[in-house]
Length: 178
View 1 (cartoon, rainbow, N blue to C red):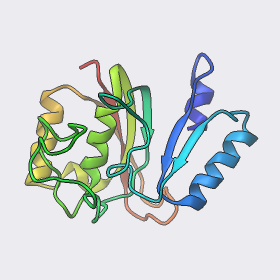
View 2: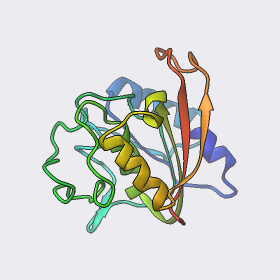
View 3: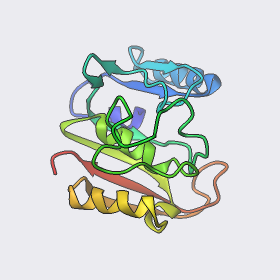
View 4: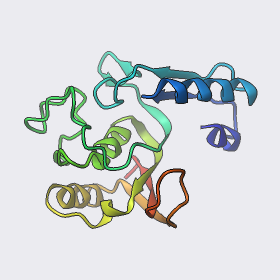
């Protein structure tokens, strides 16, 4: 978030949501130390998917830019959500794309980011290697993302780049301008 703020041409407002309270506390402290004391970092102890903190009356708050590093292949991403069909989600994150499989929440977080983008918004999401190759529901979601023009690019990253993660990953660059 700090790097994005540094690259912005004007002063921006920073919003962040973190599940872990210790990480959220560190993020708040870093914002103050790096001259972003007005950054709004929220922590609920719940997943961003089941308890999004930035909402508007008509759905998710929308942003010009969104960056995310969600948990890789979250096995319990659907806890607290009704995923009985695409239209069951109150924020319409899966509508028109498909429902991610219960054992891998990577696309759930990616679709959350897409629904959080303003009309001409841009996003970047770090996802694990498998998102490009897994089949079934994820293959369908990937196809829908491509057909709808949301993917601007995908950048491959080497293994062992992130703490505690030895697998390769990708940065998905998203464009809501289609």
